[in-house]
Image (cartoon, rainbow, N blue to C red; front, side, top):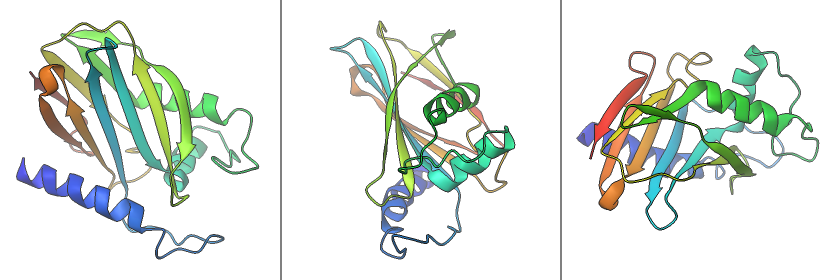
Length: 177
């Protein structure tokens, strides 16, 4: 658990700092492949809200492997089909079950990160009652990068917190609340 918290801390610290070392025109390739995701149960709205942070170049590489090229995500030249491809990709790679029942989320939208190197994707599952078990299968970007790490921070019912770490050796896990 301590190692997972350290990964999450480093992720939150390092991802935003990439803008300091990059120019606005040409971004150097990053030496680590990491995504971060927040899953929060909003009791007032009876909703599960997901926020997913992905490096744009990594996401475009993964989508290119599926045949979706020249999407120019979060730029003025963004393809009209970019959001559709992103949503389909996330649906394929991130599955969630609550109390052993698969849930379907909707794509609320996306926005570019402050440093312009990543995209924030917003997803939501509506009409969710309190649950005791959350199962996540997260294959995001694993097909594109051997060293990919996916970190998920979770706030469940009664504000109980948890963290999950995924990689090529472990792509699914369960949290009990």
